[in-house]
Length: 320
Image 1 (cartoon, helix red, strand yellow):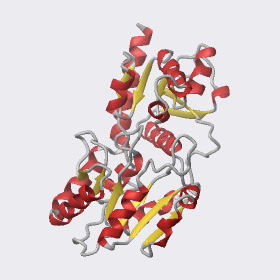
Image 2 (cartoon, rainbow, N blue to C red; image 1 turned 60 degrees about the vertical axis):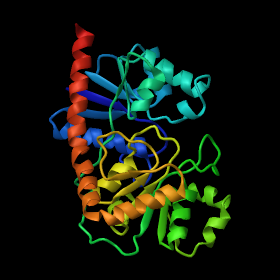
Image 3 (cartoon, rainbow, N blue to C red; image 1 turned 180 degrees about the vertical axis):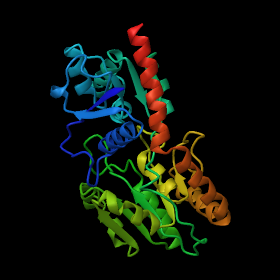
């Protein structure tokens, strides 16, 4: 099969050197397409032509609509949490809805988005993880676990909005006098500039723009991953699956899909999160076993095989 993914055109190279979630997904698909024997291309939207590829896979709504204007059929994959944040009357929602309407099929990485759009072309397709890059090391139960958060915070242009729950992760660390690292892109600095009180905690480590080549080292140097997010387009999102594949049990806010193992599900409530911390430490070996299972079950190669089946089904339906 001859496949083209449309470059998201966000100014981030593919593969991304550090931050870049959509770019990472595009690259993982590309590498696994080639591994599975398919011809794979990554092209900017203006480099694509009708009937040039068997499948064109687009990840950004406005680029999908550009394909539609040129009468180029495409599969769309939605990654935009703003469709929920801004609501169904927003330009974000309406633009994505139009991209869905004009697609052959649209994939969403969270089951709640299937219900949210309630559209016949929308179906669930989970994120994955590169298990060659992210793999576990088995560590004994820590007496003072090191906590880790990795996220790009802010929401809807408000850099100080705590979408990812940094304050809740820090509160848990402070309550138990634990070391915590919060990592992410450099624009997280704007969040901390609006929450300077957080910097008073001596056991808080801030890390910015960790290269992808150093991410495994970051995961392995910590014990438990904290993710009290309030809104995600991916359930689970990429950092959660990477943490699981690296052998870190998780304390997470969302009711993630049943396919995710090794996570304590807690609301954004430090007391409930502390219950999760205690349960993880009390049942350490079980959590480690289950979190590693998540990485195995969600490896990108198998996710790509499932994507190829979706392509084939869509391709066959289109030519009939």
